[in-house]
Image (cartoon, rainbow, N blue to C red; front, side):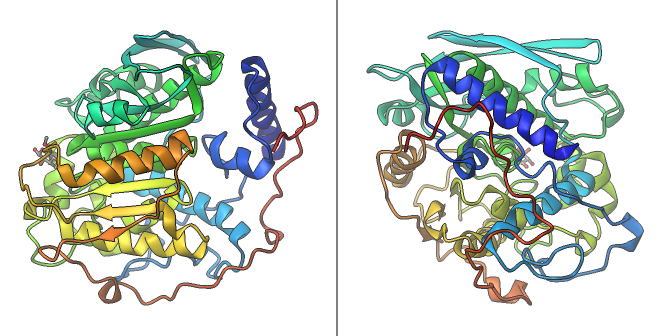
Length: 432
Ligand code: MCU
Protein backbone atom coordinates (compact mmCIF):
# COMPACT_ATOMS: atom_id res chain seq x y z
CA UNK A 1 0.00 0.00 0.00
CA UNK A 2 2.73 2.45 0.98
CA UNK A 3 4.70 1.68 -2.16
CA UNK A 4 1.60 2.45 -4.20
CA UNK A 5 1.23 5.71 -2.34
CA UNK A 6 4.78 6.69 -3.25
CA UNK A 7 4.13 5.94 -6.90
CA UNK A 8 1.05 8.09 -6.89
CA UNK A 9 3.02 10.92 -5.34
CA UNK A 10 5.82 10.51 -7.86
CA UNK A 11 3.37 10.49 -10.75
CA UNK A 12 1.69 13.59 -9.44
CA UNK A 13 5.02 15.35 -9.36
CA UNK A 14 5.80 14.28 -12.91
CA UNK A 15 2.38 15.40 -14.12
CA UNK A 16 2.69 18.79 -12.47
CA UNK A 17 6.02 19.29 -14.09
CA UNK A 18 4.89 18.32 -17.54
CA UNK A 19 1.91 20.66 -17.30
CA UNK A 20 4.33 23.38 -16.33
CA UNK A 21 6.53 22.43 -19.25
CA UNK A 22 9.57 22.50 -17.03
CA UNK A 23 11.39 19.28 -16.34
CA UNK A 24 13.71 20.01 -13.50
CA UNK A 25 13.40 16.74 -11.66
CA UNK A 26 15.73 14.40 -13.44
CA UNK A 27 16.20 11.45 -11.14
CA UNK A 28 14.11 9.77 -8.48
CA UNK A 29 16.78 10.83 -6.02
CA UNK A 30 16.30 14.47 -6.93
CA UNK A 31 12.54 13.96 -6.79
CA UNK A 32 12.92 12.64 -3.27
CA UNK A 33 14.90 15.70 -2.31
CA UNK A 34 12.65 18.42 -3.69
CA UNK A 35 9.36 16.98 -4.89
CA UNK A 36 7.80 15.17 -1.97
CA UNK A 37 6.55 16.56 1.31
CA UNK A 38 7.42 13.39 3.23
CA UNK A 39 9.78 11.15 1.31
CA UNK A 40 9.74 8.46 4.01
CA UNK A 41 5.99 7.98 4.37
CA UNK A 42 6.32 4.33 3.34
CA UNK A 43 8.98 3.46 5.91
CA UNK A 44 7.85 0.95 8.54
CA UNK A 45 7.94 2.66 11.97
CA UNK A 46 6.71 1.18 15.24
CA UNK A 47 6.76 3.89 17.87
CA UNK A 48 7.65 3.11 21.49
CA UNK A 49 5.05 3.78 24.16
CA UNK A 50 5.67 6.81 26.34
CA UNK A 51 6.14 4.62 29.41
CA UNK A 52 8.95 2.66 27.78
CA UNK A 53 11.10 5.67 26.90
CA UNK A 54 14.56 5.54 28.48
CA UNK A 55 16.09 8.48 30.31
CA UNK A 56 19.03 9.98 28.46
CA UNK A 57 20.89 13.00 29.81
CA UNK A 58 22.72 13.34 26.47
CA UNK A 59 21.39 14.04 23.01
CA UNK A 60 19.90 10.88 21.51
CA UNK A 61 22.10 9.27 18.85
CA UNK A 62 20.64 10.43 15.52
CA UNK A 63 22.21 7.46 13.74
CA UNK A 64 20.72 4.76 16.01
CA UNK A 65 17.47 3.26 14.81
CA UNK A 66 14.56 2.21 16.97
CA UNK A 67 15.72 -1.40 16.56
CA UNK A 68 18.93 -0.30 18.33
CA UNK A 69 21.24 -0.83 15.36
CA UNK A 70 23.07 2.07 13.74
CA UNK A 71 22.60 3.06 10.14
CA UNK A 72 25.45 2.18 7.79
CA UNK A 73 24.66 3.77 4.44
CA UNK A 74 23.52 7.18 3.28
CA UNK A 75 20.43 5.47 1.91
CA UNK A 76 19.59 4.21 5.41
CA UNK A 77 19.06 7.81 6.52
CA UNK A 78 15.75 8.02 4.64
CA UNK A 79 13.89 5.65 6.97
CA UNK A 80 15.86 6.65 10.07
CA UNK A 81 14.70 10.19 9.34
CA UNK A 82 11.14 8.94 9.20
CA UNK A 83 11.55 7.40 12.67
CA UNK A 84 12.72 10.76 14.00
CA UNK A 85 9.83 12.45 12.24
CA UNK A 86 7.25 10.14 13.75
CA UNK A 87 8.78 10.38 17.24
CA UNK A 88 8.80 14.17 16.97
CA UNK A 89 5.17 14.27 15.92
CA UNK A 90 4.09 11.90 18.67
CA UNK A 91 5.99 13.42 21.58
CA UNK A 92 6.81 17.03 20.61
CA UNK A 93 4.78 18.86 17.98
CA UNK A 94 1.71 16.73 17.29
CA UNK A 95 0.88 15.01 14.03
CA UNK A 96 1.12 16.74 10.69
CA UNK A 97 -1.63 15.20 8.57
CA UNK A 98 -0.69 14.33 4.99
CA UNK A 99 -1.93 16.48 2.13
CA UNK A 100 -5.72 16.92 2.42
CA UNK A 101 -8.05 15.33 -0.13
CA UNK A 102 -8.45 18.54 -2.10
CA UNK A 103 -6.21 21.58 -2.20
CA UNK A 104 -7.00 24.26 -4.77
CA UNK A 105 -6.03 27.88 -5.17
CA UNK A 106 -4.43 30.51 -7.31
CA UNK A 107 -1.10 32.24 -7.66
CA UNK A 108 -1.02 35.78 -9.05
CA UNK A 109 1.68 38.45 -9.07
CA UNK A 110 0.31 39.79 -5.81
CA UNK A 111 -1.49 36.99 -4.01
CA UNK A 112 -1.81 33.29 -3.26
CA UNK A 113 -5.13 31.79 -2.20
CA UNK A 114 -5.44 28.35 -0.65
CA UNK A 115 -8.66 26.34 -0.37
CA UNK A 116 -8.63 23.06 1.48
CA UNK A 117 -11.31 20.35 1.56
CA UNK A 118 -11.02 17.27 3.71
CA UNK A 119 -13.58 14.88 5.16
CA UNK A 120 -16.44 17.25 4.45
CA UNK A 121 -14.77 20.24 6.06
CA UNK A 122 -13.25 23.17 4.24
CA UNK A 123 -11.17 26.20 5.03
CA UNK A 124 -9.25 28.89 3.15
CA UNK A 125 -6.50 31.37 3.69
CA UNK A 126 -4.36 33.63 1.55
CA UNK A 127 -0.95 35.24 1.51
CA UNK A 128 0.31 38.31 -0.32
CA UNK A 129 3.18 38.08 -2.82
CA UNK A 130 5.90 40.61 -3.67
CA UNK A 131 7.87 39.69 -6.76
CA UNK A 132 11.47 40.76 -7.31
CA UNK A 133 12.35 42.70 -10.41
CA UNK A 134 13.16 40.75 -13.54
CA UNK A 135 11.41 37.99 -15.43
CA UNK A 136 9.88 35.00 -13.68
CA UNK A 137 9.21 32.34 -12.76
CA UNK A 138 10.85 33.13 -9.44
CA UNK A 139 11.79 31.18 -6.37
CA UNK A 140 10.02 32.42 -3.25
CA UNK A 141 10.62 32.78 0.46
CA UNK A 142 7.67 32.45 2.80
CA UNK A 143 8.10 35.11 5.48
CA UNK A 144 6.08 34.43 8.62
CA UNK A 145 4.14 37.44 9.84
CA UNK A 146 6.28 39.84 7.80
CA UNK A 147 8.85 39.14 10.47
CA UNK A 148 11.88 37.22 9.26
CA UNK A 149 14.93 37.66 7.10
CA UNK A 150 15.12 41.10 5.49
CA UNK A 151 12.44 41.09 2.78
CA UNK A 152 14.24 43.74 0.71
CA UNK A 153 17.41 41.65 0.72
CA UNK A 154 15.44 38.55 -0.29
CA UNK A 155 13.92 40.34 -3.27
CA UNK A 156 17.22 41.98 -4.18
CA UNK A 157 18.70 38.48 -4.35
CA UNK A 158 16.04 37.50 -6.90
CA UNK A 159 13.41 35.67 -4.86
CA UNK A 160 9.80 36.63 -4.30
CA UNK A 161 8.48 37.20 -0.78
CA UNK A 162 5.31 35.42 0.28
CA UNK A 163 3.89 37.26 3.25
CA UNK A 164 2.28 34.53 5.34
CA UNK A 165 0.13 35.26 8.37
CA UNK A 166 0.39 32.06 10.41
CA UNK A 167 -2.37 33.19 12.75
CA UNK A 168 -4.96 32.62 10.02
CA UNK A 169 -3.97 28.94 10.11
CA UNK A 170 -3.47 28.60 13.87
CA UNK A 171 -4.43 31.40 16.26
CA UNK A 172 -2.57 32.27 19.42
CA UNK A 173 -4.36 32.98 22.67
CA UNK A 174 -6.69 30.01 22.62
CA UNK A 175 -6.87 27.20 25.16
CA UNK A 176 -5.48 23.86 24.00
CA UNK A 177 -8.94 22.31 23.91
CA UNK A 178 -10.36 24.98 21.60
CA UNK A 179 -7.72 25.75 19.02
CA UNK A 180 -8.72 28.01 16.12
CA UNK A 181 -7.67 28.73 12.55
CA UNK A 182 -7.78 27.06 9.14
CA UNK A 183 -5.89 23.97 10.31
CA UNK A 184 -8.23 23.37 13.24
CA UNK A 185 -11.32 24.03 11.12
CA UNK A 186 -10.26 20.95 9.14
CA UNK A 187 -8.80 18.73 11.87
CA UNK A 188 -10.88 19.81 14.85
CA UNK A 189 -10.56 22.37 17.63
CA UNK A 190 -9.40 19.67 20.03
CA UNK A 191 -6.64 18.45 17.73
CA UNK A 192 -3.54 17.77 19.83
CA UNK A 193 -1.32 19.21 17.10
CA UNK A 194 0.35 22.43 18.22
CA UNK A 195 0.52 25.76 16.43
CA UNK A 196 4.05 25.35 15.09
CA UNK A 197 3.04 22.24 13.17
CA UNK A 198 -0.27 23.78 12.09
CA UNK A 199 1.59 26.81 10.73
CA UNK A 200 3.98 24.50 8.86
CA UNK A 201 1.00 22.64 7.42
CA UNK A 202 -0.18 25.97 6.04
CA UNK A 203 3.16 26.53 4.30
CA UNK A 204 2.89 23.03 2.82
CA UNK A 205 -0.53 23.85 1.40
CA UNK A 206 0.87 27.07 -0.13
CA UNK A 207 3.51 24.92 -1.83
CA UNK A 208 0.74 22.55 -3.05
CA UNK A 209 -0.96 25.51 -4.73
CA UNK A 210 2.31 26.74 -6.26
CA UNK A 211 2.94 23.21 -7.59
CA UNK A 212 -0.50 23.15 -9.20
CA UNK A 213 -0.29 26.69 -10.57
CA UNK A 214 1.60 25.91 -13.74
CA UNK A 215 4.84 27.46 -12.63
CA UNK A 216 4.64 30.70 -14.62
CA UNK A 217 5.02 33.01 -11.66
CA UNK A 218 6.58 31.02 -8.82
CA UNK A 219 8.70 27.89 -8.95
CA UNK A 220 7.44 25.12 -6.70
CA UNK A 221 10.80 23.42 -6.26
CA UNK A 222 12.47 26.58 -4.97
CA UNK A 223 10.68 27.59 -1.80
CA UNK A 224 12.36 28.95 1.29
CA UNK A 225 10.91 29.84 4.66
CA UNK A 226 11.91 32.32 7.35
CA UNK A 227 10.62 33.97 10.48
CA UNK A 228 11.90 35.49 13.71
CA UNK A 229 11.22 34.62 17.34
CA UNK A 230 7.96 32.65 17.62
CA UNK A 231 7.92 32.77 13.84
CA UNK A 232 11.50 31.49 13.89
CA UNK A 233 10.18 28.47 15.80
CA UNK A 234 7.51 28.19 13.12
CA UNK A 235 9.86 28.58 10.15
CA UNK A 236 12.15 25.92 11.61
CA UNK A 237 9.32 23.42 12.10
CA UNK A 238 7.97 24.14 8.59
CA UNK A 239 11.33 23.27 7.04
CA UNK A 240 11.81 20.21 9.22
CA UNK A 241 8.51 18.64 8.15
CA UNK A 242 8.28 19.45 4.45
CA UNK A 243 11.08 18.13 2.27
CA UNK A 244 9.97 20.33 -0.60
CA UNK A 245 11.29 23.36 1.28
CA UNK A 246 14.71 23.97 -0.22
CA UNK A 247 15.94 26.57 2.28
CA UNK A 248 14.97 26.95 5.95
CA UNK A 249 16.02 30.15 7.74
CA UNK A 250 14.91 30.47 11.38
CA UNK A 251 15.97 33.60 13.26
CA UNK A 252 16.32 33.91 17.05
CA UNK A 253 13.82 31.13 17.53
CA UNK A 254 14.38 30.42 21.22
CA UNK A 255 12.77 27.62 23.20
CA UNK A 256 10.48 25.43 21.02
CA UNK A 257 12.68 26.42 18.09
CA UNK A 258 16.29 25.44 17.50
CA UNK A 259 17.73 25.21 21.07
CA UNK A 260 18.08 21.71 22.50
CA UNK A 261 15.17 20.85 24.81
CA UNK A 262 17.58 19.33 27.32
CA UNK A 263 19.04 22.83 27.60
CA UNK A 264 22.49 24.05 28.61
CA UNK A 265 22.22 24.34 32.42
CA UNK A 266 22.19 27.85 33.82
CA UNK A 267 21.97 29.51 30.46
CA UNK A 268 18.79 31.38 31.31
CA UNK A 269 16.74 30.22 28.35
CA UNK A 270 12.95 30.30 28.48
CA UNK A 271 11.93 27.12 30.27
CA UNK A 272 10.04 24.37 28.49
CA UNK A 273 7.09 24.78 30.82
CA UNK A 274 7.01 28.53 30.17
CA UNK A 275 7.01 28.00 26.39
CA UNK A 276 4.48 25.18 26.67
CA UNK A 277 2.17 27.34 28.74
CA UNK A 278 2.63 30.63 26.90
CA UNK A 279 0.92 29.48 23.69
CA UNK A 280 -0.07 26.10 22.26
CA UNK A 281 3.09 26.13 20.13
CA UNK A 282 4.12 22.60 21.09
CA UNK A 283 1.77 19.68 20.67
CA UNK A 284 -0.35 18.75 23.69
CA UNK A 285 1.72 15.57 24.24
CA UNK A 286 4.79 17.63 25.07
CA UNK A 287 3.15 18.64 28.34
CA UNK A 288 4.38 15.55 30.18
CA UNK A 289 7.99 16.24 29.17
CA UNK A 290 8.44 19.88 30.18
CA UNK A 291 9.88 18.88 33.55
CA UNK A 292 11.76 15.84 32.29
CA UNK A 293 13.25 16.49 28.84
CA UNK A 294 15.76 13.68 29.42
CA UNK A 295 12.87 11.30 28.69
CA UNK A 296 12.42 12.71 25.21
CA UNK A 297 13.49 10.17 22.56
CA UNK A 298 14.49 13.07 20.29
CA UNK A 299 16.00 16.51 20.64
CA UNK A 300 16.31 19.44 18.28
CA UNK A 301 19.69 18.40 16.84
CA UNK A 302 17.58 15.73 15.14
CA UNK A 303 15.17 18.34 13.78
CA UNK A 304 18.22 20.10 12.34
CA UNK A 305 19.25 16.73 10.89
CA UNK A 306 15.80 16.22 9.35
CA UNK A 307 16.41 19.27 7.18
CA UNK A 308 19.55 17.64 5.71
CA UNK A 309 20.71 17.68 2.98
CA UNK A 310 18.56 20.73 2.18
CA UNK A 311 19.71 24.27 2.84
CA UNK A 312 19.55 25.45 6.46
CA UNK A 313 20.65 28.90 7.62
CA UNK A 314 20.11 29.39 11.34
CA UNK A 315 20.49 32.95 12.57
CA UNK A 316 20.81 33.50 16.30
CA UNK A 317 21.39 36.23 18.84
CA UNK A 318 24.08 35.67 21.50
CA UNK A 319 23.09 38.78 23.47
CA UNK A 320 19.77 37.51 24.85
CA UNK A 321 20.14 34.55 27.22
CA UNK A 322 16.37 33.97 27.19
CA UNK A 323 16.72 32.81 23.58
CA UNK A 324 19.04 29.98 24.62
CA UNK A 325 21.78 30.72 22.08
CA UNK A 326 24.21 28.22 23.63
CA UNK A 327 21.56 25.53 23.47
CA UNK A 328 20.84 26.49 19.88
CA UNK A 329 24.51 26.20 18.92
CA UNK A 330 24.62 22.69 20.41
CA UNK A 331 21.59 21.72 18.31
CA UNK A 332 23.25 23.09 15.19
CA UNK A 333 26.55 21.34 15.92
CA UNK A 334 24.78 18.04 16.64
CA UNK A 335 22.62 18.24 13.53
CA UNK A 336 25.61 19.27 11.44
CA UNK A 337 27.09 15.85 12.21
CA UNK A 338 24.28 14.28 10.17
CA UNK A 339 24.81 16.80 7.38
CA UNK A 340 28.50 15.81 7.38
CA UNK A 341 27.75 12.09 7.41
CA UNK A 342 25.49 12.58 4.38
CA UNK A 343 28.22 14.50 2.57
CA UNK A 344 26.24 17.74 2.83
CA UNK A 345 28.25 19.55 5.50
CA UNK A 346 28.37 22.62 3.31
CA UNK A 347 24.60 23.02 3.30
CA UNK A 348 24.20 24.19 6.91
CA UNK A 349 25.09 27.58 8.31
CA UNK A 350 24.74 28.65 11.92
CA UNK A 351 25.50 32.28 12.57
CA UNK A 352 25.30 33.96 15.95
CA UNK A 353 28.37 36.15 15.55
CA UNK A 354 26.50 39.46 15.40
CA UNK A 355 27.05 42.82 17.08
CA UNK A 356 23.54 44.23 17.47
CA UNK A 357 21.65 42.62 20.34
CA UNK A 358 18.17 43.91 19.47
CA UNK A 359 15.71 41.03 19.14
CA UNK A 360 14.79 40.43 15.48
CA UNK A 361 16.83 43.35 14.15
CA UNK A 362 17.88 43.27 10.51
CA UNK A 363 21.58 42.61 10.87
CA UNK A 364 24.21 43.64 8.34
CA UNK A 365 26.24 40.49 9.11
CA UNK A 366 23.48 38.29 7.74
CA UNK A 367 22.87 40.04 4.46
CA UNK A 368 25.66 38.35 2.50
CA UNK A 369 25.08 34.81 3.79
CA UNK A 370 21.32 35.30 3.31
CA UNK A 371 21.78 36.20 -0.32
CA UNK A 372 24.36 33.44 -0.82
CA UNK A 373 21.93 30.89 0.61
CA UNK A 374 19.19 32.14 -1.70
CA UNK A 375 21.54 31.93 -4.68
CA UNK A 376 22.68 28.44 -3.75
CA UNK A 377 19.43 26.74 -2.77
CA UNK A 378 16.66 28.73 -4.49
CA UNK A 379 18.18 30.26 -7.62
CA UNK A 380 20.75 27.46 -7.87
CA UNK A 381 23.33 29.83 -9.26
CA UNK A 382 25.74 29.88 -6.31
CA UNK A 383 27.88 27.47 -4.41
CA UNK A 384 28.99 29.30 -1.27
CA UNK A 385 30.23 27.06 1.52
CA UNK A 386 28.22 26.74 4.73
CA UNK A 387 29.65 28.29 7.87
CA UNK A 388 29.45 27.69 11.60
CA UNK A 389 30.03 31.08 13.19
CA UNK A 390 29.20 30.84 16.85
CA UNK A 391 29.65 34.00 18.90
CA UNK A 392 32.20 33.63 21.69
CA UNK A 393 29.49 35.13 23.93
CA UNK A 394 27.31 32.04 23.66
CA UNK A 395 29.23 28.98 22.68
CA UNK A 396 27.87 25.50 23.26
CA UNK A 397 30.06 22.41 23.39
CA UNK A 398 28.73 19.37 21.53
CA UNK A 399 31.24 17.07 23.25
CA UNK A 400 29.42 17.66 26.55
CA UNK A 401 26.22 16.47 24.95
CA UNK A 402 26.96 13.34 23.02
CA UNK A 403 28.08 9.83 23.75
CA UNK A 404 27.95 8.79 20.10
CA UNK A 405 30.34 9.20 17.23
CA UNK A 406 29.60 10.17 13.66
CA UNK A 407 29.75 7.16 11.37
CA UNK A 408 31.24 7.09 7.90
CA UNK A 409 28.14 6.27 5.91
CA UNK A 410 28.79 4.36 2.72
CA UNK A 411 27.25 5.31 -0.60
CA UNK A 412 25.91 1.82 -1.21
CA UNK A 413 22.25 1.26 -1.86
CA UNK A 414 19.78 1.26 1.02
CA UNK A 415 19.65 -1.75 3.31
CA UNK A 416 16.69 -4.14 2.84
CA UNK A 417 14.55 -2.28 5.38
CA UNK A 418 14.58 0.73 3.07
CA UNK A 419 12.48 0.77 -0.06
CA UNK A 420 14.18 1.75 -3.26
CA UNK A 421 12.49 4.80 -4.74
CA UNK A 422 9.97 3.59 -7.32
CA UNK A 423 10.29 4.15 -11.00
CA UNK A 424 7.80 6.60 -12.45
CA UNK A 425 6.11 4.96 -15.42
CA UNK A 426 4.93 7.50 -17.91
CA UNK A 427 7.15 10.20 -16.47
CA UNK A 428 9.15 12.30 -18.92
CA UNK A 429 12.70 11.15 -19.49
CA UNK A 430 15.40 12.68 -17.36
CA UNK A 431 16.80 15.80 -18.90
CA UNK A 432 20.02 16.20 -16.97
C1 MCU B 1 11.61 33.94 21.22
O1 MCU B 1 10.25 33.80 20.89
C2 MCU B 1 9.22 34.24 21.75
C3 MCU B 1 9.39 33.75 23.16
O2 MCU B 1 9.42 32.34 23.18
C4 MCU B 1 8.23 34.27 24.02
O3 MCU B 1 8.44 33.92 25.38
C5 MCU B 1 8.07 35.75 23.92
O4 MCU B 1 6.85 36.12 24.55
O5 MCU B 1 7.95 36.11 22.57
C6 MCU B 1 9.05 35.78 21.75
C7 MCU B 1 8.64 36.35 20.42
O6 MCU B 1 7.97 35.72 19.63
O7 MCU B 1 8.94 37.65 20.24
C8 MCU B 1 8.48 38.31 19.09
